[in-house]
Length: 235
Image 1 (spheres, rainbow, N blue to C red):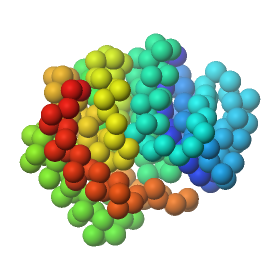
Image 2: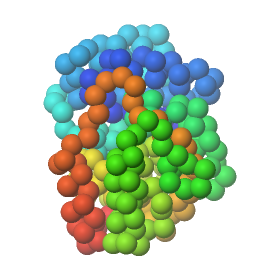
Image 3: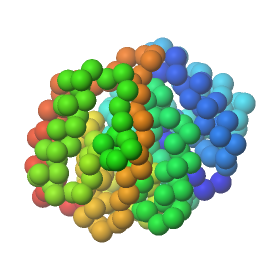
Image 4: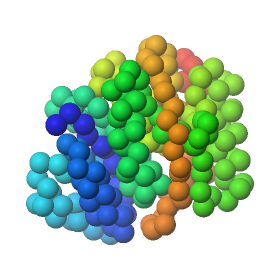
């Protein structure tokens, strides 16, 4: 088994079982690592039940408190690298990312990409069920990032990605200390600075049907200010 999907969770009891089963149903040799931040709604207990059913495919890292999306992914990346996975995904639990697209992103890496990005804003990509204002805010946030960092990616805040392990082995993960959208931007920028090949794969992004969004004004502010900090970071 050479592929693992890392999924951070916090209060995802309405989605976590369905997501796990949807990934397993792809009938691929896939592993899933959930990183749960002590969800009070019993998410971790549901994952533990799945581990009993799929002991070779589903794993759990439980953390004591809510520490942010970026730190959850860094924790997951290190866990996966220590176990020699080749293709390492990051993905949301709320079905805004279609599990079926896992195979398309992995194929892009198998065919030469170092990082395959599930993109809403490249040709063929789209967003469903988002208010128009949120779509415009997200789109122009990516324009803003490209203007500052000169990174040739249309969807700079995308959170559905497949990395070849060599990318995560090269990036200084301990220096990537952002939590939200800024984390997503920083990982792409770091890969680009190290001259890895980034490829955008068009996806249809669908707003969550269950559970609550983790978006906040603090996350957005971190991204707006963080891009300036990234220019001088040792990544």
